[in-house]
Image 1 (cartoon, rainbow, N blue to C red):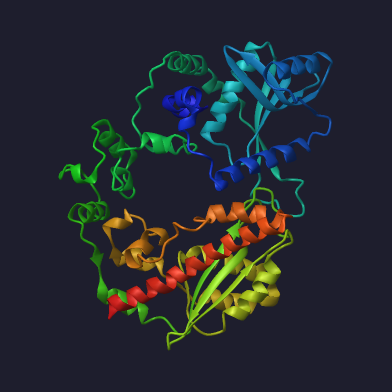
Image 2: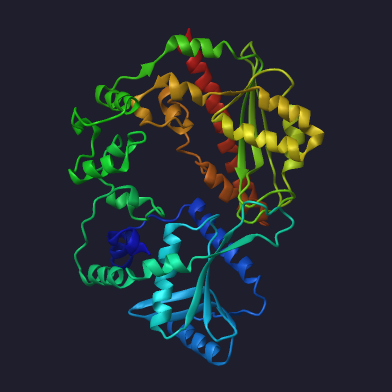
Length: 475
């Protein structure tokens, strides 16, 4: 599968694995979640036998299980043409044929899933297994709600799609074997394939020399145009041909990089700020969205808040801070909401960054907890999106075409930084919170609690300081 994404990735994984970047907590959480989904899927087949060995032991254990009449196997191992596979679920039907079920934690069938199953089918056929059907078992995000998880999975027959891809497998495998037979690192250009379908652990190594303001930062650049520039080895925006076709928005961005000049509409920024009503509440949620829902009424992958930070700025410049972090495995929503409606009063603007997210979440909380409906809807109706300023009226070359708070903060408020924090991103906060609520050792739990609070607090502190910087610009 690595070779299908990039032959250089395959070569590095086998020949020089030490060049890989260590997994971040957020990436490890995704892997752990996939394992959790896999274990849950097995529960749907109570007669299944788990193959526990590694490599040759697993192959022998699989052979013994099939010969002894096993009707359902988990992690069955087969080898053919130099490729070892482990099947998530293998079912024997009444005629003696087998059905392969691949389990994925995604909410739909993806192209890479078809390739994955085609590789497995190629090996199974080569190993003498009579394979009848191939299916994908993925998460049902449409009508599954906790605590009723009997329909957590959707089973899709992908046999026809797999069979179309199956024809390509021998040549793809041969290509990979040729790559691995060489002691010389293959040369492959960087591109979007470095992140799709999965982030490559060797990206940092391969992207050395690619400038920060590169062609990959041009907003919404068509893939064919990107490929053209990559083939011509044009990566630096300063080297971009003046006649290269770009949209108006793309041209504004490229010009700002090349001239190193920001675009600031002071008048519109000033007008926008006059719409704010004191006291100003600078507010941010941290949320989680597990594949297997945990709390009443939630669907798979549905967001729920476990933490918030709120700075309240009065007209006299006095500032107060309120926060909440849920500390155990119970549903965080009831106690979080109770604290939130106390921290955010009935008057005053509520300033957020990326309004659509907070708005959707607040409205869903209002539906699920009608006792607080009026207060939560009031908060949602008073939201003001600070990010809109940077989407429309303040553009700086150092933002690299992005408008996230982590791009904006170093330019407007260079004294504040996420760099020294233990938690630096929202997906990391999810992973740390998952660990923290289960931690039994007090010192470890306290350390993670402090890291989560520091991260969320900086989000709203950053918004306060950005507001002050924008106010100075407006004046």
